[in-house]
Image 1: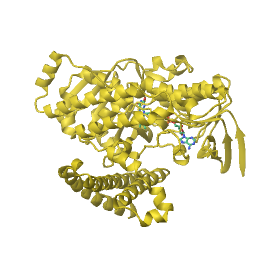
Image 2: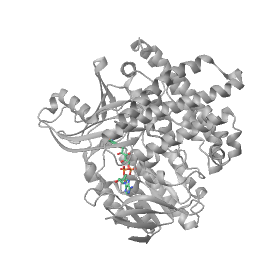
Image 3: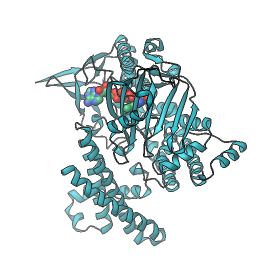
Image 4: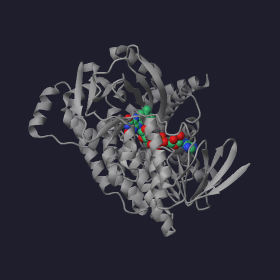
Length: 580
Ligand SMILES: Cc1cc2nc3c(=O)[nH]c(=O)nc-3n(C[C@H](O)[C@H](O)[C@H](O)COP(=O)(O)OP(=O)(O)OC[C@H]3O[C@@H](n4cnc5c(N)ncnc54)[C@H](O)[C@@H]3O)c2cc1C
């Protein structure tokens, strides 16, 4: 049985971004329906570290006074970085307002505020598909509720369904500017427990961080109160998967303050640790919060980005609907406001995230211990920092043994500044996006060269741009003539693209509705599949450069050939693990 509903705006997801978007659009008089897959009791129960930064400046569509009762600890003023490798603890001040919150209470209050503004919430409603007109304008969604299929039609759909949103898997965005350059490796897998300890902890005024055994992960201990601790950890999905539950339990056992503690809640989820989407709009559609990569990629803090993007998308929906035009150009200002508010900063911070994936954990920790705390804090939150001459000399003295890393860090910082300058020039209309991306991708190429990190975004690679430009995959499929006359270069290009699409598609399909263990196996599988794709791209470049020997360097390719053979080996091993 199928039932149909109509409204002005559909918001998918009753998280922070969805609630801010719904409250904004409903407050302006639009008919807004929020679809949430959880039950009414569970809605607002979100996997989170519960650290809320900068709430004093949040959009006032949801008054701060309405959220404040969820702020359980407002006395936190610094980060405490434990570096066991260096036997050091760094205390780093956190600029601006910071609170640790009761996340469920916070979530309920957001929903209450959006309801008060006039939005209507449908719980237990799982969105499973996106409706699109012939010209690919999004016109609604299809959802299930109690085994009944429901069709919701609207002028605009706002996707606030969180990381790895299913809506973006289902919709056809190839003819739009919407950023589809999204793969699992740009996400972090994270898990947290709420732990009650028998005695007050000494560090109830600090957010405690500790590196995991690998560079691209960290553990956290955030005090909701002096006896209720949010303890969690996460790792970048480019790394070999960690056993999150066991690794957390192991660290808890080493800390005397957790002796006799009880766990009252457990939750895990993926979160984006990438730059914001280049464009989060398509005709009739906007993505907000985690669904558009609006998270600080170095701290994992995403509540602020979700609140602001929700607010801006709500306002954009109001203006587009009142103008009678929900096309991409009409929604574009939403992208500009996001980049202006925090997107530029997050894109700069993403550069440090990329750097961290290429540094050995011991070196990274040594480097952290050597850098001045306040400068680290500045870089962590603003995306850049500056050093005076005195401070440079002091840092050079303290960092003996890590000068190579410092130099790398310095070069990376300059490139991060370049990236931010480019984001400050974000285009004012969709037609400017291609040129803007090309310049940004050139800077990204330099970043991979300097850091030695693997490319995080396919399109960042110049080689990939070359390949994409000459792609004939569609022709190869449909044009037998082309197939019979194929050139080796084209054939390899097509095969490479097919492989990349297959890997991305499969990951999208397989990363849902499966247990954590299954997911880990698949992550492993796709990590190596991606490396194989990288290898194929390099072969394609080889063939291409063979015709143009000026650009070919044998060292570059032989080094990567070795690496890739290793990854083919791991890939086959992962296939074996998944199958068996
Ligand atoms: C373990 C962990 C720790 C974190 N710690 C912090 C922190 O300390 N501070 C911080 O600022 N940020 C933190 N973050 C990030 C932060 O939680 C997110 O950035 C923020 O919640 C994003 O809000 P959102 O509304 O975009 O998405 P979400 O909060 O994820 O909300 C998405 C909503 O959509 C619903 N939904 C999903 N799919 C469907 C569907 N198909 N149909 C219907 N409904 C659907 C979900 O049930 C959910 O209610 C953390 C994230 C994780 C995973």
